[in-house]
Length: 113
Image 1 (cartoon, rainbow, N blue to C red):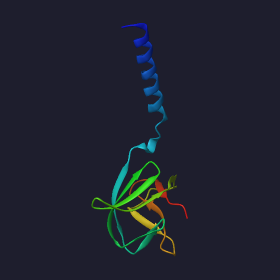
Image 2: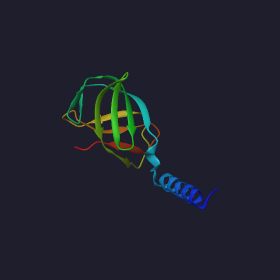
Image 3: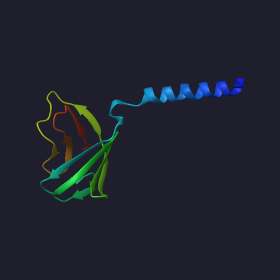
Image 4: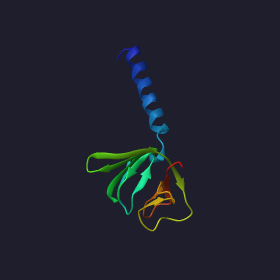
């Protein structure tokens, strides 16, 4: 192996190591089936009552009905004092989704108001 190839290989390994360290804990996409019991709004999108698949990748939420994207929004994870008793979609008085809770987890996914 030439000196140049060794340097290039070492640089790639260092870069790969740095990228692995930079990945946050919630980097693994999370997916859950959640029922919506009444029409709600996610961002500017009206979502009708029904069963949907919620996919959260980092800070991005995608709501799916089968393979069809129904709504998308950005949010953030926040910790709570207690674990959620069950999966739920929480909306405010205007029907706008404000957070998603997942059974057995203290972290909730919060959508901006």
